[in-house]
Length: 344
Image 1: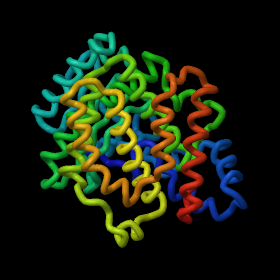
Image 2 (image 1 turned 60 degrees about the vertical axis):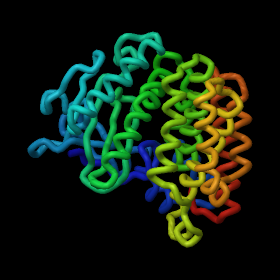
Image 3 (image 1 turned 180 degrees about the vertical axis):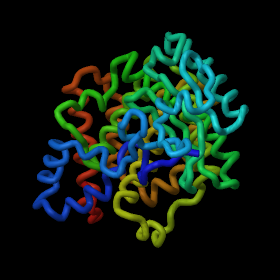
Image 4 (image 1 turned 30 degrees about the horizontal axis):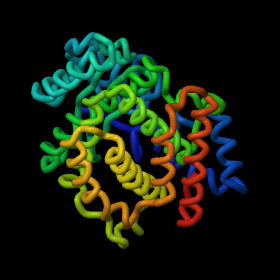
């Protein structure tokens, strides 16, 4: 069972509380961001691995030790997964799912083994709390899938798991094989604020979609469509009511707006560019599922910008990455100001 630090999502929020507290000490959002960008506060609140002494979002308890996924090798049973080491606490069927998915994907990416994508360790486990399903690939070369312990979500989480394996693997491909990652090109800042992390991650997801379409990575495109169908029909079929929305913390309001806006924009773009008739029909069904969420909590200016960037050529330079990042960040700032959200 994994222990995780308190985060809104896998990329951003180890420093949300720190930023919100600091926001009261600076005269402007720009001044606060300059402070955050200059000093790396990214490890605030993170747990430390007992072996490598590095901070980690997820650690595995072993006797009196706390082990990051990489250092957990040797303490926990593992198997070979296309050249990577797999620690699996979720049963044999989960191992079979990931084997099948990656076995189909790797030839599409022109590689034979996961280490060719800088993936050294794969962890499939459950968390100590009731948070929902998390998944991420980090710079240390760890591909992590964390399941909740909510019995009612077991089957739907397994369905979602099957649709995010290719997504996270392709993020590793984008950065380490294709050399087209966005976040790794934003090198002028030591750390990013919450809104900046969101802008960088959205830029990364947009880039991944463009490369997947350009390179005809059909397993990923299919999974992206299937995941929307599963999520909005089985996980969250009903939008937040206005009362529920008002009860959310400001950072969660912003991330929720982004989630529904990005999904709606992505499906609209798919309707334009996908050629497979069956996929296009499912996209049309997905748009009907997502629209009630988008109509209540989406942001039309961001939707339009996302589609515009999706239709632009693939970004290949630090200058192009910075341009996309700043355009997205500008709209996050505008939305936060218009809705009086205390985020940075």
